[in-house]
Length: 126
Image 1 (tube, rainbow, N blue to C red):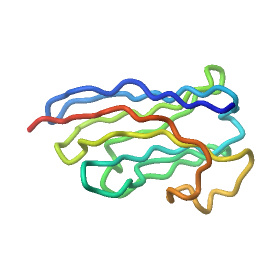
Image 2 (image 1 turned 90 degrees about the horizontal axis):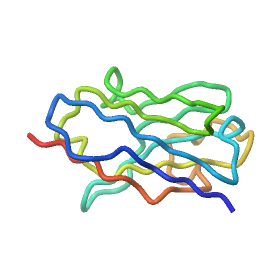
Image 3 (image 1 turned 90 degrees about the vertical axis):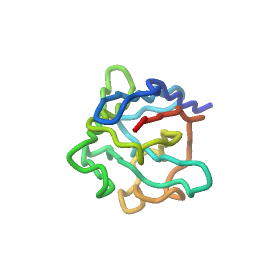
Image 4 (image 1 turned 120 degrees about the horizontal axis):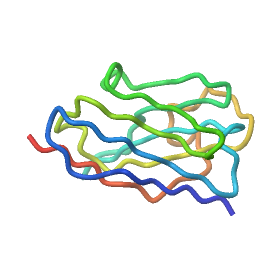
């Protein structure tokens, strides 16, 4: 059974940094596309970043230059380094993965993923 577990969320002041981790079991990240999404209260879940099995990164425009997604295949873990955090980054952040060897065509779309973690809260104070 596939399981994704996020960690690293917390409370940080504006301008600060956090690093989120997504650890997988029952699935090998090196052959999957992996994404980060976030959802604020009363809002739709939105795409943040993704990394494909071919190691191509994707970002929503609002986090470009501030967030970095990376993969450690030896640890079967994907990270999201978040710098220069803003209050509008406050949300529950979710890790998602798709089936092995899929196209990257839908990595920016919620429906493009097959497995989801339970989320980790990120709160940025102003």
